[in-house]
Amino acid sequence: MHEVTATADLLVDIGPCDDDAYLFLNGRLIVQTRLGETRRFQREMPDGSYNFRLQVINSGGWAWKAKLILTINGETLTAVDEVGGSGLYTGEVYEQEWQCRIENGKLVEF
Image (cartoon, rainbow, N blue to C red; front, side):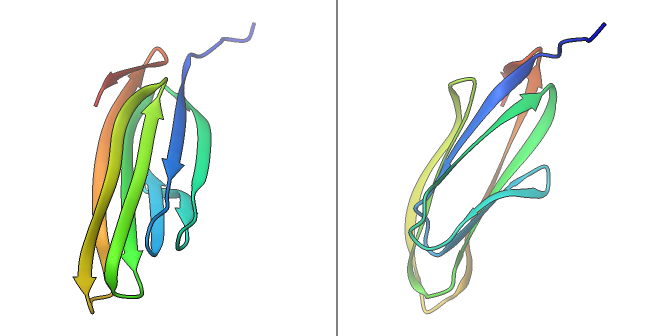
């Protein structure tokens, strides 16, 4: 007999970011974008604890942008829409982490 396990639906909308954006799930890169690119990523998430981390790197200096929407089962875990100026600095301009827990296919903690 095959046991059916409940899962939650993850939907990621990322971008446009300036210049490069990287989204990690439990330390593993799951999606990345380059300058001005937008991407959508979907995945079923089994029960467990999760850590998301968004990193934006500005290679051109001056202004930067970070845009991300993470939803689980239609519930927004986070919505990032940040812009800033870095002057002549190039490198990491934005980094943020979010944690959540899924039990019985439902988002129970974030």
